[in-house]
Every structure is written in structure tokens, then in C-alpha cells.
Length: 334
Image 1 (tube, rainbow, N blue to C red):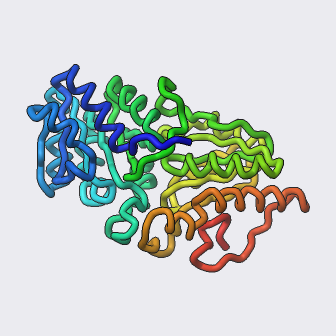
Image 2 (cartoon, rainbow, N blue to C red):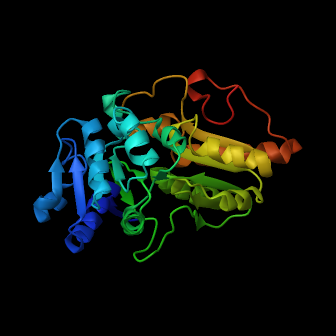
Image 3 (cartoon, rainbow, N blue to C red):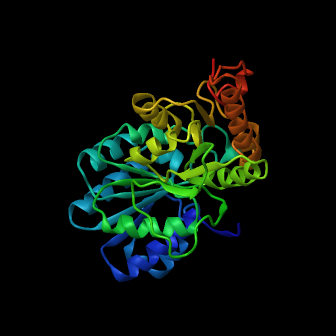
């Protein structure tokens, strides 16, 4: 898979093109023009840009005010600050008030890996899934990001779009279309399903290829929208049997929790949730090292799939297995 732009660069590039066509589009940032890749927008459309400074609560309030008078504000700021420092304003001024504000939350998950827990945003999916009236979207590559920006521009529903920092492999071909709230089957499979979101889609595809070489047919679903989530796609996935979910998020309240609730309610199947730990701070370090440590890479995903299939073939049941504390989030912790 060839690498394209990072999702943040793709988002702002597409936003710039839309902004040239519509002067009501306004971009706001909180001293994060570089981090959010907004330079291309500010150079092309300086009159449609607001630098708020390090004042995220004010940034959201200003965006809600702009939306109230008919503008189309896009707030671009680090995910760690949007999902904590500005949470009340997003909950009340944006979601509760139904203001057409779109939030580009950059460096989500552990993109700021070496900076440690203060800059990790591993709770944001859980938080925003719990707030009515706001969509939660995690694109996986340049093509999908650009397409979803165009879909967001057509919508008046508030949205939280979480992306990382790194350039991502292009999963999709240019021109591919997407619908907010509808998952995409990236790879076909009949033995097991891997459901991933955001930057975890790429390693899920790599795991599919590794498993295929072993004769295992693994379906891969890209669950790019976490709220509203595609219930029908999850239930179809359960028909193949076991499900592995993969997310760059706390094990509590994210993709795995959402899928488990739906599956347990309607069609119980064996599951593994690959995620970051919920009972301790994530280790600090470069993102690839952190992913490897927690099994959020090709090898970790493939291993989880093998374990599920092996247990199923042995006696048809999935039995919990003891794991060291730092690995208990992988699979079903005791």
C-alpha cells in the first residue's frame, strides 16, 4: 500500500478547496496551525481564519456563535485538548444546542506518543459517543478523509473527526465514496471478522494478508463512523462467527464496547477487543513501538484472530486466559 498524505493534511487541503467556493466556511485554531496542517488554508483564505490562541473553551464558544449566524465553522485543534479542556463547551454549546460545528481533532490516540499521558487522547471516542447530537468519525487514509470532508460539508449535524499525525497508506482508490454511518468491507472473509477504525484499518488489512497466507479467510470492516454506528454491518459480521475489534483507544467505551453491546444483545459470538489499557496510563514512546507493545499491529491482530479460531476449533468455546497486567486489555481480561 502506497502512503498518501496524513489525514490532517488531507482534511485541511479539502477544506481549503471548499472554502474557496464558500466564504461562509471559517477555520479556527487554538495556537495549533502547524499541528493541524492549517497552513494551506490560512495562506489561501486569511480572511476566513481565526487564531484564538491557547483558549480551547473560547474557541468552541466562538465556533458555536459563528454557526448561530449562518457560518460554517471548522475547529482544528489537538484531540487531547478538545476531548478534555473544551468538553463542556462541546457538550453544551455545540451538541446540545445543535450548532453546525465540525471539529478536526488531530493527533488523536497516542500520536503524541513520546509526550505521555497528558497529551494522549485515549478516552475521546467513549466521551463523545455518550453525548447525543454529535457524530464521531475516524477516517483511515487520505482518500477517505477528503471524501468525508465533502460529506460533512453537506451536513448540518455537529461532528468530531479524530485523526492522527502520520502519513497513512492509502486503503482506498481515488474517487471512492463513503456514507457517514455506513461501514465499509475492505476485505472479504468467511472465517473471522476484524473490525477496525481510524489508523488501525491499515494494520488490520496487513493482518488479513498474513492470515490469508496461512489459509485463514478474515473479513476486514472499516468502521469509520463510531456514532452513529453501523448496527447492520456488525450483525452481518457476527454471522461469520468470531470478531476481533481493533482501536487506538481505551478498552472502555470505544469500538470494542460498542460492538460487544450490539453482538451480545442480538447475536452473541466470541470476541477479542484489541485496545489500549483502561486501568493504567499508556506507555510513552514512538507510536509504532506503543502499537507493538499493546498488540495493535499486524502481528498482534493476526495472533488474536488465530487464538479465537483455535479456541473455537478445540471445543467450540472461548475460555478466558490469564495475561500479565500490561497485556490484559488484549482479549477478554480477567
